[in-house]
Length: 265
Image (tube, rainbow, N blue to C red; front, side, top):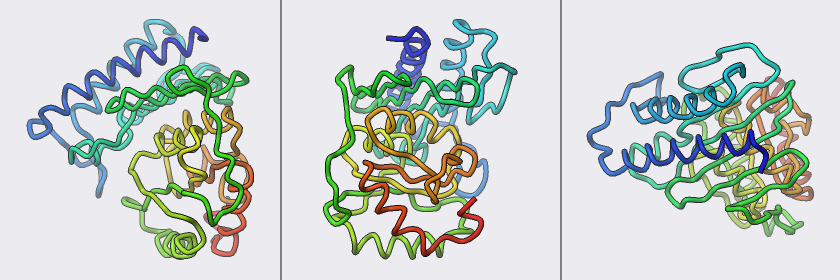
């Protein structure tokens, strides 16, 4: 395992143990509202602190982009961190959340870890070396027809500007696929695409820390990732489509008639 990936795995597991311990006593947690429907708990903060401590001990000169503490440092290496993706699920005791850690080098994601602490599932990827679940190689699904596909998504919950467009796409895909799922952690949803559990995924208005690690998992598992017009701007726009190559193409085609100007760029 690449030494930088190894550091990320160590950090993710440390955060996972903090989250699992806290999940035993959810009622005792202090929770703040960042904005409407956007929660942060002391667990998010403790998990992020643990991740930063391990990463900065190993690589003190690297830059950080983390959900709770923002941007720090200036380096061609930047760690992109979500200490608890799926906080709302976690706060309800709904066992679907993850830790996402990615390393970007000169703007390109080179290392990725998504860790599911509930099931102790560790998804990892190093650019050019494939994607793995618990050290076993994973690949995107072989399904080629949208009507046979199981598609993941995330409903808008904070920003409702694109809600009508989203619902129109949702309405069409419900009728054109074998099912839509909305588990509540985009990082895990992308990991599920990489592992062939989902055949595709789409969502609007995500943050870089939600998707940075997951997108490398998908591409290293043989899948494709793009923004809503298939370009590589997804980390900037937060609008994303991912899937096996054939399903990816069919998702883009389905989305195309609905896209407003602000979703195209």
